[in-house]
Length: 249
Image 1 (cartoon, one colour):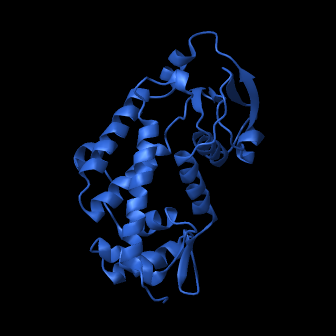
Image 2 (cartoon, helix red, strand yellow; image 1 turned 30 degrees about the vertical axis):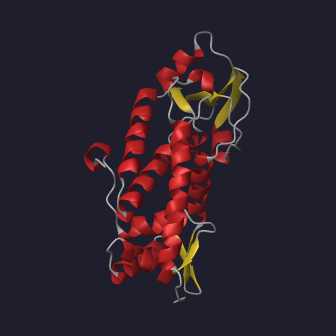
Image 3 (tube, one colour; image 1 turned 90 degrees about the vertical axis):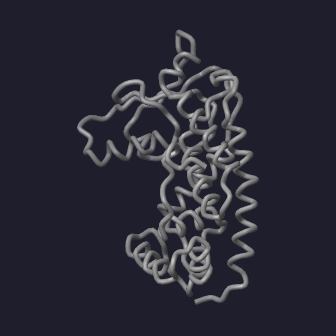
């Protein structure tokens, strides 16, 4: 596994706790179980417990009866993560959804919130204040997107595949996906498996989820999802064996 070329994030107590809970349904685990997960990666119990306290203070986690669970903000992230693995699509008719900012003098916080919402909706920005994508996804539009934008449906005059290539770096996404597939093959230790799986999930969140006619013929998105699903099942079994039996703190 070439960590340098992939720039994989190093494991920290916080990232281990967060990745474990984001991948767990429901996202709630006893403190002792999370400590034992940390031990799997040679992270001391005290370090994990400090991370848990800080995450509670930061509003990332909620503590109750000796267990920790994700708060609403991170539950939304888990939902986006789950959707990136099993996207809800519909037959594409050729139409594109278009969002045009239609309010003036927005505070910086509102502009930032809109950009985040558009990224979550997998729209790309054609130019300042104009966002679009093929209309092949089924998902609700958050209030921040409907409140700041007028939404339209249209069809490009030119080649839609060429337009897609200008809006998304499809070769770049594909190259990293293939590198991650190779890293999955080469991940020999639990720490490597955990690190690569977290990177795969982050990458799937950036998949534009375009309809097949707009994708290169060798697009690796479906393969990466399939391989990750099998890999996650293996990791889940490993963690289950490692953290049980456990006692509730």
